[in-house]
Image (cartoon, rainbow, N blue to C red):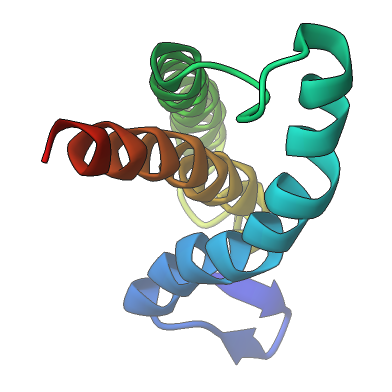
Length: 117
């Protein structure tokens, strides 16, 4: 949980990286990814609802793989030396991937629910 040698971050604050990624990624998704997808697919929504939800699920699986690899590295470091600190920045990529997955999944699900109502 250390950012630098003298600064510890509370564990619960790592969850904020998911929300920050969502806030940062939604405008990119709306202003960049959808128009680019629209130019390729010639569909008004860019990609289908199922493709959005599938992309979100794929990113969630990818985040779990990253989390497993980082946990493996952490356990390997702990076997060698129990006092060897590992920076909190190793945990950030999995939270960023979860935030990006939420953007795709929730956008697709909201569109699906709105369409079904």
